[in-house]
Image 1 (cartoon, rainbow, N blue to C red):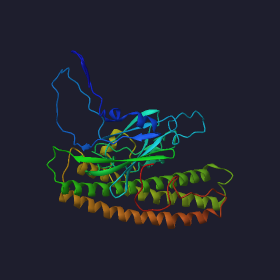
Image 2 (cartoon, rainbow, N blue to C red):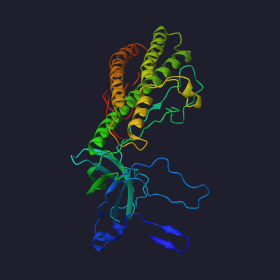
Image 3 (cartoon, one colour):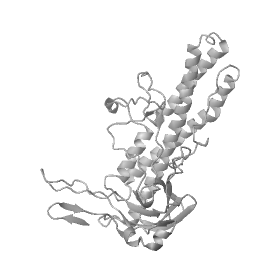
Image 4 (spheres, rainbow, N blue to C red):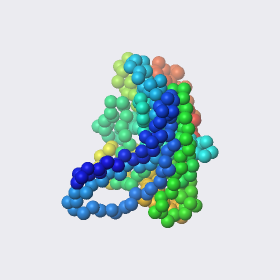
Length: 372
């Protein structure tokens, strides 16, 4: 800590790495310093500050600070345009005591000391990216990437990964061909009155919800990918005078419109397909699985809650699980039956096929996945 008379205080969080930065550490290609224990704090709600107070303070980033030193042999000094962003970064993997991956982080690769903060959370679920306008609203625009965000209003939604439970984890840093590991202890908030069993029960439910959020978002992304192609194909048939009078092409256009509507009907169970991003969306149509799962996640895990799920929360989750199972059956039928049948019709017309697989995703239908 550094202070000036009557001026203020400056605090450097965790000077341990500086104390350990001896000649031996400087001589190594890389050093991962032992991280200090990290508290799984819950933010105190309702704290107010006196009006006009001149006292302001800034807390350190939430979570665990992970510090490592790199020599010139491993630091990023590449100037070649052929060097990719991933090659210029270090990779940090957080593992459970059983060796399961909790989180993967991309980190800096600078000469000397590097520090990355892990927020003690699992990876966030997949984010849906919509590629089609809402029904009857062609004026809703896509961004330059050809997508638009799924924006839901007036709900306490949680699209973050849940907090990990207290315990011992392994931090593994990989830079080039060098990999280093250190243990990390995550401690329970000393202010909580929840038992270890309460926190474990909460973690079990929040991680299950996170997997289901991921599954629903991936189904939305794949449906949007297919529906965009179907709409483009139908538009091609209607707008191209050279094929507009071709009976086979016209039949394919009608089938594309029909299949698009069927895909939209499945999407309507997964999220509110009428969302435009406008504030008024909150009053127009009911929310669906994607928004409701995010609201349940918020109810169970956010707002300083550190207790076991209630009976009502468990009952709502069971209801959502059944709805996801029903939607997954319809989604699988669409992808494995309806779409291949449509592709067979396309072979009889001189039109481009529809690609079922979403870019970067395996064709599997089931839940799962982690952040890149």
